[in-house]
Amino acid sequence: MTARVAIMTGGTGALGQSVTSRLLSAGVTVCIPYAVPAELDALRARLGAGASLHAERIDVTEEAAVAGFVRSVVGAHGRVDILVNGVGGFAGGDLASTSLAEWDRMLNLNLRSAVIGCRAVLPAMTAAGFGRIVNISSRAVVPPLGGFIGYTVAKAAIITLTQALAREVARGITVNAVLPSTMDTPANRQAMPDADRSSWVSTDAVAEVIAYLASDAAGMVSGATIPV
Image 1: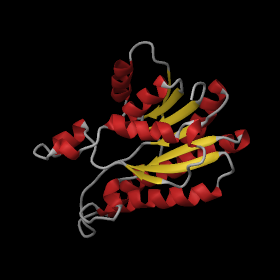
Image 2: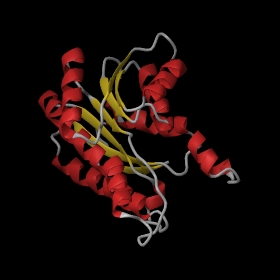
Image 3: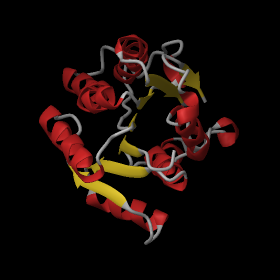
Image 4: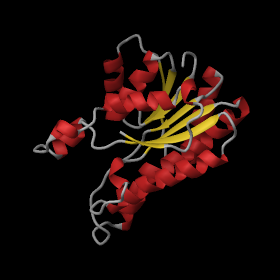
């Protein structure tokens, strides 16, 4: 993947940091739209002084902002080859207890951001005849579970988006989704301090799958939903 250019939304999160590190190690230029400066500082500290990131503070749920970011990436690097839609969020609650505001938040973070990201990069990918789009869904929504219905519906929609878009894109562009099970992250450890973590998946393991789907070698894989 040397000389490829990737946009990694959610690149400052727990999974995003692992994916960013993995892509950088493969020679990819990684461009990150971020929201919280302290999280970007933490990522830079993890990567070390030698890491070169293209980072801009934007809201990935706003189409104009994302379109501007993609233009900035193409202007700086001449291309965009890879999009990893890593922005997301979780909220518990059944149908009766989940407010419409919470529904909107789950759909915006998990689905709208991915739709906007795909729309923004596809013109450049189509013109180049090459592209890799990797979306993040969840193993918990196959089959759908109750108790966190807003999250479930949004992440299930990511699977449908992936499969439908894979049929729409031009030859040379692939669209796939990764479905992590419970990941071993600081947030999950804090939320579930007494849980058995023996079956939790590491963010580095998920990043390996994402890196493969983003690679030239995965050119014949499209429309796949891969549980990890």
